[in-house]
Amino acid sequence: MIEPQQVADAIAERDASARLLGIELIAVGAGTAQTRLVVRPDMDNGHGVCHGGIIFTLADAAMAYACNSRNETTMATAAAVDFVNPGQVGSTLTATATETVLRGRSGVYDVTVADDSGTVVAIFRGRVRRVGGQNVPDTDA
Image (tube, rainbow, N blue to C red; front, side):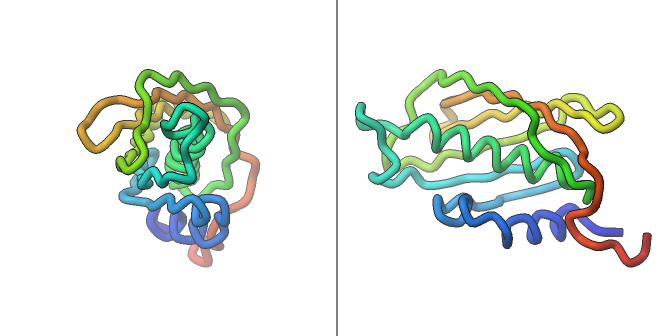
């Protein structure tokens, strides 16, 4: 049986965008994951705070690890984010993804992004669909 960490490692190896941004996987389990990044000065927007697209990408990465954790290739079909506080340059943002619903080939994942003081920066909800196949070949299956 392929473990969630093995799947996450395989996905991380192929995810050039997450590497470019410095997104780090902290933890992964069945239907859950945590990612984090340090907000660099080149990630700010025209108002001097973290660009919303960076925050969205951090949350999306956490969801990707969570929804693929069972080694069934799964892709996002839709997502929405509410930005509730600014992410400050120099802060560390942590995204915590939780599987809210998994039924058949479809799932819903909620992700909370918080800064290093615990202040919630964004709330993200994504919908996913299993598309067939495995992320890591399971020779025991």
